[in-house]
Length: 366
Ligand code: IPM
Ligand code: MN
Image (cartoon, rainbow, N blue to C red; front, side, top):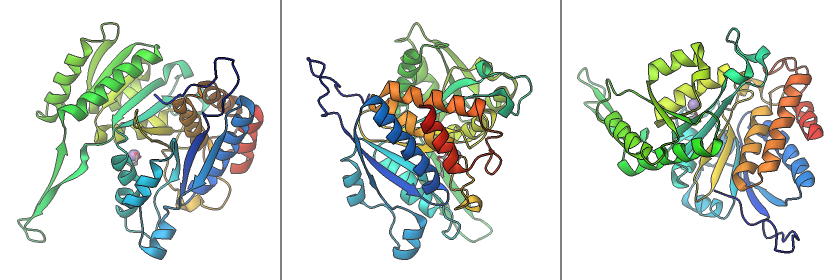
């Protein structure tokens, strides 16, 4: 995944490893948090000696309202020339819900075949956990969400639309290949993480008997290739219960697109809120995209109060994925330090510092 050869045989940096990063600040508070992420990225590049070039792509709601444009095939071809994408947020209050989501965010995920949505759930400070008596060691797991199929495929139809007899059909589309590549990624990830060495399949085998039969069979088959990984199964409803009651049971969880979407919002809450939750849309052999998962938060836009840590953590994930593992880890450690020694809260407007000051603190602790 990612990392290219860093040094020549003589141990002289070759600089062939420079990265091209496409930056999509997006809407609302996206540009503000991405600015802080770029600040930290710059500090990391100076400290760890890698070089990168970043270019801004305006796929915002503002641009859509002005021009009617979102993301087209030419944009996708252009983005394929980059090593990674760094995304702020998608969603504009004046644009009808669904347009930017499908034509920008989901378009990028699908067109670049970013078939994994990786969402670490890690508590950095017990003070920010809404659960009683849970410590950082209790909340440290990763959700591997399938990111290219399921209910997100957009398949279905209306029948007799607008009549009393109307039917709306929304199909969950699951291919053996799509399910298997996701499950394989999850096993590999769990093995590489080497923490609990336990992978939980989160599904709904008791009701969704086609989709989850395929998932369960595929999971069981792939599991045979990983005898050192313990496997487990949990229904999605029970999973939400255990996130609250016994989050320490989880190490790595693999699930479909819709369930992954839902459980990772709950995951974000138990790790301290949207201000700290980061994710990666991964194509292991292509261009991956990293984002804070919190959205565009229109009501905080332009006030310099939003928490940039999720975006900063997403930047750290991006570096790890590019092969700059030390830099990625250092960013995470700097974030932990700032969270534990400086901030009053992780919530917008309550941090005790402005957005840009939090960026300065992290860059300074690197
Ligand atoms: C997320 C978001 C997106 C999703 C929306 C904005 C389309 O909620 O990244 O989790 O549903 O995947
Ligand atoms: Mn979501």
